Length: 143
Image (cartoon, rainbow, N blue to C red; front, side):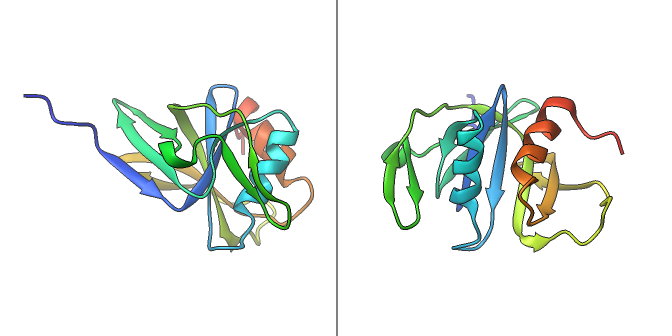
């Protein structure tokens, strides 16, 4: 008898850039939705805001929204906005907004989720963070 896939629901937001998702983690008010909205303005697609359901499928960690909040994102001071969303997007990167990056060229970091190691970036707190995330997912990291 087959076992159901492992799942994990996080207090996080996620967007997709091409076929790769980036997961934003951080405390309430850390900027998860704001960074997601910035990336959406640059062409990313919403996966989920506030809660993200992660599911392992073979060697992939797939991100989807909980059904109750699919297609919605909070814009602080504006309200809950509607947005087209995507599901089952492989997570390629985690951004930890609570951890400030202090190194110019940081070490490679990763976190294990559902038994898979996913690269992690810390919050650089600059205007070019969103474009850097897009380029990271498009071209990878070389150093």
